[in-house]
Length: 412
Image (tube, rainbow, N blue to C red; front, top):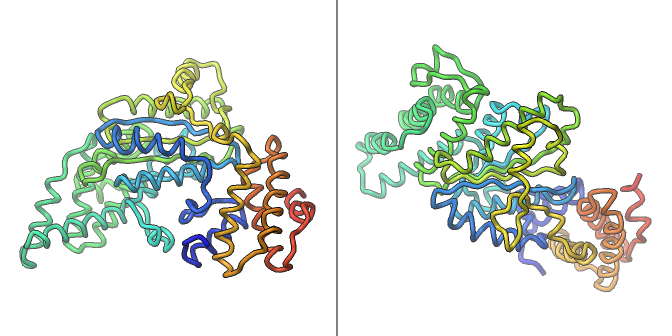
């Protein structure tokens, strides 16, 4: 039986069975086939190059339901292991369109998360730059107390450490971070909230924010500078750096030609920034279902296409494109292994022991059917939803369901 908390096991089964999506906590318990990519990214980038001040960009390609989110969660876990702050951002035309960089910055600021334990992640720990600053402030207090600073002198000692934070590319950003921390030190929730409003990209009110030395708006002309400044400040706060995970939620077929051109320009700017010294300690992953966003005939399109041609592989870790489907040599065997791992999670979740012979046959049959449909649907997502349905049937009825019973509702 797999060693996993029962409540966590149940949340995994609920998430996978309901919508085929991996849960934020516990996805590792049914991960299969990603090790070659993850081991290389860990050793060649997160454990060394990025921590040493390098920067890199990777394009992750996988069909809808093909494991992009699962892969990005795996990257986040690796990044946290090396003390990176991570921002997982879902891109969508409504909330975070990539052609509006100011909204991209706001999403990053609201998603930024320091390394969390599995328990913290499961409990719904707060995310965002405000929560990160509160956490850092408590760290400063603890460090000062550990240095035997007496309580009457604690406030002054913490303020002195805040002033030691290095300046960033944006003076306004530096002022905002320092004054937000000083507001916490002075127990002024209102001042902290006002500054976080600006840091979160929620608007600039001159008469309010200028008091803190914040003299510019966060808009399309300043947003990318703010992203770089965030990365710079994180390293000053003793994080290894920043890892940004962009997960495209919808296709961009509804975008206008102008919007697609701006998106391509923004993406090219990010890729180019990863080769410059002002973006140190930053790694960006951009996950897409396909490369249709590269359609076009403009100079921007051609320039971006040239930057995305190299393919990531064991013998070419500097390649840009990561094709998740290439990690699966035998789709049926791949799905069977996932099914076996999920069945162990399932048995823990429901405190049961499924009939072994029937279980093995059920997983095999569901895997064969899902793999046969891999050119028509997101077969990985279809499989995990269907196999959980089959496990429910097997537990309740004590016999294996037919393939028709498992897939009938899913195929309507």
